[in-house]
Length: 199
Image 1 (cartoon, rainbow, N blue to C red):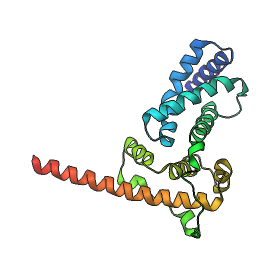
Image 2 (tube, rainbow, N blue to C red; image 1 turned 90 degrees about the vertical axis):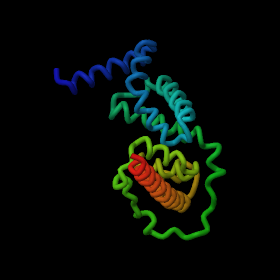
Image 3 (cartoon, rainbow, N blue to C red; image 1 turned 135 degrees about the vertical axis):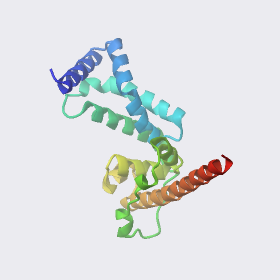
Image 4 (cartoon, one colour; image 1 turned 60 degrees about the horizontal axis):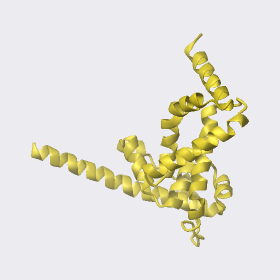
């Protein structure tokens, strides 16, 4: 049996064991996917403790809903949707304080504006920390648009806001991130030069 077949079989066995309510299978499935799911939650959270709370709640929902999984599409993708929805629910009560009615017109060029963060050679941990520093409304819209590939209409429906607000929050998030990334890069360069001069 090839590696792909073996991996698919192991996942299928894990899922069926969890559907049967076997604790050992739930533990193994958790260990298999905990890191990846926590990584998703980290992007939506303000810090690691909050991300762990979201992930824990998400896994509770995974095990409660796992009988609904019909092996149609990726199981990891199915779990990811649960984690994202859990993160949104976690913040939903607070989001209304972060969104506001936009009185400025949002030009079409904002929606197509892209920032290339790879050029500054940030490590994943550094980028996550910068994303976590975003104001809550910016952070949620940015994650949904960039990482989950939601359109503005879908974001608006998910968060109960207008499409223009979604576009505005995304533009402001990108502008904020660009500023923070540039500040981070300048600080790293300054520290690097300082270390060289001290040698």
